[in-house]
Length: 184
Image 1: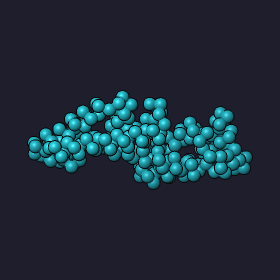
Image 2: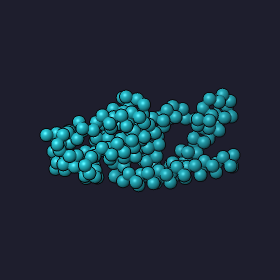
Image 3: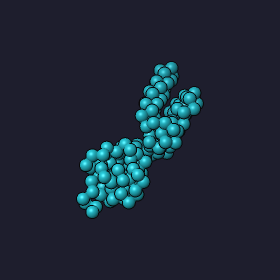
Image 4: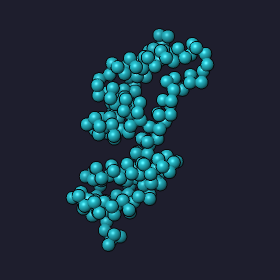
C-alpha cells in the first residue's frame, strides 16, 4: 500500500491531520533529505538536526508543498536552506568567541585592541539606534545565529521580510562602520 500511494495523496491526507500519512512521507524521503543536509554541513549530527528541522517545516507548511507526484524536490530545497542557515549560525557563533574583528583577533598590540573596542562600541551604538524589531532581528540572527525561519516565527514576520530587513540592516551597519573608519 505504501508504495502505491503518491506523495500528493500523502500530503493531502496529512493536511487533514493524518499523522500516519506524514510518517509515510517521512519514511519515504528521510534518507535523501539527510544526505542533502550532510552535503552542506559535513557533520552527521548537524545533518540529523537539519533533517529534523526540514520535516518540522514540512509539517508546519503542508499547504505550501506543491502537490506534485513527488515532494522530494521541495524537501531537498528546504533541507538545503535549513542546512545553510545552520552553517551560517555555526560560523557566526565561532566568530563571536572573541569581541574583536577577525582581522585583529590575533594582534597583540594595545592600539589595535583599543581600535577594535571602538569599532565594537560603534556597532553597539548603531544597534541601539535600530527599531525594536530590527534590534530583535540583529540579536536573533546575527548574534545568536537563529535561522531566518525561526526568527520570522518568533517575531511574527514572514521569512522574506526577515531576509529583507537583515539585508538593509547589514548595509546600514557596513555604512556606519565605513564612516567610522574614514573619520579615524
